[in-house]
Image (cartoon, rainbow, N blue to C red; front, side, top):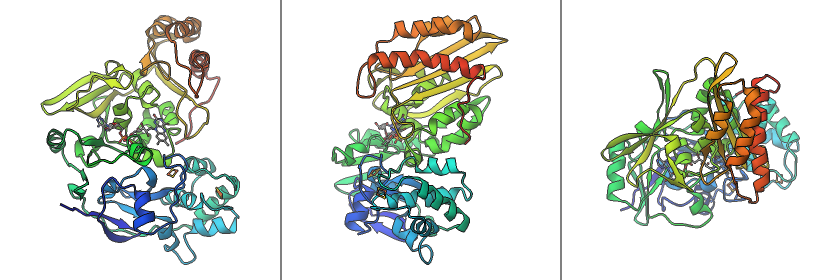
Length: 464
Ligand SMILES: Cc1cc2nc3c(=O)[nH]c(=O)nc-3n(C[C@H](O)[C@H](O)[C@H](O)COP(=O)(O)OP(=O)(O)OC[C@H]3O[C@@H](n4cnc5c(N)ncnc54)[C@H](O)[C@@H]3O)c2cc1C
Ligand code: FES
Ligand code: FES
């Protein structure tokens, strides 16, 4: 049975009859014949395919990579492409006009994606600072022009203002797509578990910034997927009784203000998590679900003592994140369970937390090593410590020996022994991101950075 995918395209209601696992990029270019949206890398890296998406229940359109977004994920959403921006004002959207005036485009291949990213920024932030413009462009690569004229165009466009095509809210159905590829959009956890029991082979899909690469790159075909997006229980972010609970389907973008309020260093890390486009789609549940040893969420959450709430057909169970990882991409989560939420105690007086990502590029890159450190101080002495690393073993992992070396003395006094413990504990691998020696040296030296930060010798926290 066919269930058309209903969404708004550049302000007009649209019903697409296609496989739900078609990429939005493919559909736009081949079916809708809107070819302003370009294909560069087809893996979320270059931004040439950027489009604006307003998810159901949200009020803002956010830049998203169409190459790793699937048509079934558009159900109930509003989609704006560069063509829609061109029609939004006479002479084009102010970003388009200013890009032209400022000579911000040469070959032009990156230009539609850049226009979309900047129009999205201005829609959420009418007066962006220069660093916010650079942040908005971190997921858009331009080989010819250089970013100075692009940033100047953004600044000029901000003065002019500019609206996106308006769109009515469209109710999302529970099932979309055709017989060859159907996506389910359950609204409750009970419905999600029933669907998973009925279709054990179905893909569990959150933002897709990890798993949809199988479609975009490896050309996998998904007869069936079950989306977490509309499950109310998975969407919420709640603070109560000294705890914050992040629903597994919360995006990194949605989490950012909370992280900034409680753990500014964690927020700084998340601002380097992929790009604006990736953070708008990618979720905490997907990051822990994929269980990568170089996933950036895990080290920070490990030192915050996070607990996972796993939900199965017979109820929930709590699993400390430290007990979740078993081996390379293997976890204690059973096949019939999903991550429901991640629970973290809010910080108390005397606690300090820092997390550092070391990667080849500052923006839009995967970690070579990620070090996360948390101490609870009693006067000038470390009363408790949690130190964790990504990129140093088959799983994200704490270094207990280094923690023991810090406890009972001032941070500065224990650092030498903690560094030695890191060097003795880990035998990291060598790959294209870094040699084993490099990784071990960097991981140990990040502890010096931590000590310097706590002593007020460095500044590492970005404004939000
Ligand atoms: C260009 C690019 C840059 C990136 N940069 C970074 C980075 O800087 N740091 C980083 O850590 N990662 C990065 N990633 C990886 C990815 O964006 C993150 O891991 C993201 O958090 C995945 O979330 P998602 O919702 O997109 O997951 P999805 O792709 O939807 O799912 C990933 C896996 O988790 C499973 N899953 C999803 N939700 C649940 C749930 N509730 N319970 C159980 N399993 C679940 C899925 O079945 C799938 O196996 C990047 C990816 C791209 C393409
Ligand atoms: S084509 Fe490069 S990010 Fe989509
Ligand atoms: S203008 Fe050529 S890639 Fe940007």
